[in-house]
Image (cartoon, rainbow, N blue to C red; front, side, top):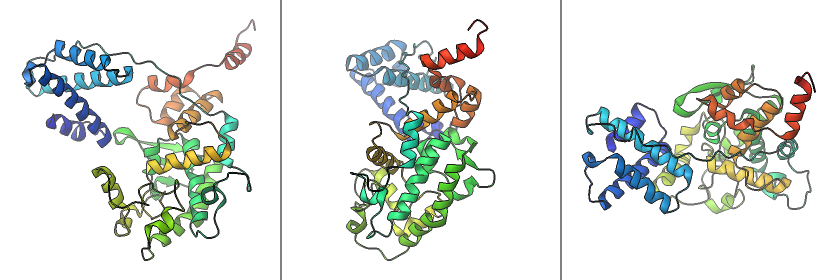
Amino acid sequence: MAAFADHLVAELNRSPRTVRAYRADLASLRAHAIRMGRPELTALDLAMLRGWLADLRADGAAPATLARRSSVARAFSAFATRRGHLPEDVAARLASVRAPRRIPRVLTVEQARTLLEGPPPGTPGRPAIREAGDPGDPLAGALRLRDDLVLELLYATGVRVSELCGLDLDDVDHERRLLRVTGKGDRQRAVPYGLPAARALAAWLRGGRSELVRHSQRPSRRPSQHGAADAGTADPAEARGPSGPPETRETEARRTPGATATAAHALLLGARGGRLDPRAVRRILAARLASTGGPDGVSPHGLRHSAATHLLDGGADLRSVQELLGHASLATTQIYTHVTPERLRAAFQQAHPRA
C-alpha cells in the first residue's frame, strides 16, 4: 500500500487529497480481508473484492462511492501484478458500479449577473464588513476588492477553486487577458478572461493586494481584533490558534507572519497575507449569495458549471469548452450538454428545413 501511494505521487502525479482517498479505500479493503481471515495480499481474489463492495453497499454506500472504490481496487491490483506481488490481475474482471450522472446545479445568467454586481448599498441584511465596508476596519475595502475578483474569475474562467487559489502574479498575462492555470496532473492551460474580470483584477492589484501585504507586515496584534471582523471572508483558520488536524495546522503555519514570504507571489491573499484558502472562497460565495438573494447550496464548483453551461448556450462548441475547463476527456464535458425544451425548439426552428 505504501509503494502504491508512492507510485501515485511519483509516477501519476496525483494530488495529496487523491492519495489520501486512495489510501483510505485500500485500508477499508484490508480491514475486510482481515475480517475474512485472509489478510495476506496473495489471498486477494475477485470473490473478496466483490464481497467487499457488497458489504459497502449493504452499509448504505452511495453508487459514486462504490464506483470510486472499484476503480481503486482495479488500479491497485494492476500495480501489484506489475510489481510481482500478485500472480495475476485479480481485479481485471471486476465490474464497475455505474454511478448516476446528475445534471449540475447552475445559476441562470441573470442570477450570475446579480451575484457579481452585488447588492446595492443600503440593502437590508447586507453584511457590514464584506459587502458595504466598515469605516472602522482598515481592511474592509481591500477584502471587498478581493472578493469581487474571486467571484469574477470563478465565473469568467470556469477554473476550479484549487486552481484559482494556486494562481501566482506571473500567471496573469494582462495584455492578452489570459491566465496560466495549473490543473489536475500539473497540466497547464491558458484561460481567457473578459473585461469585467480585468477591471476587478486591476482594482485588486492597485489598491487591495498591497493593503493586505502592508497589513501583514505590521506588528502582530490580538487575533480577535480582526478575526471576528473578517469572519467568513478571510482564511477560516486565521481567527484560531494552531489547533486541529495536522493538515489544518500545516495550512495555518504557512499563514503565520514569518511564513508570509511563501505567499509573496500569490495572486489572491487572505487577511493576514497568506495565500487564500479554498475554504475561504466557499465562505465568500455563500455570503454573497445570501446578500443578493441567490439560491442556496451553490458552491464554487457550481460557478464552474454555470460558466460552462452559459458558454454552450451562447454557441460555444464542446471541444472549446473542454479546453477551457481543462477536462482530460470530452466525455466529462458532455455533462453540460443537458438540453432545455426552449433550446431544443430554437435549434429546431433555426436548422431544420421543415421547421
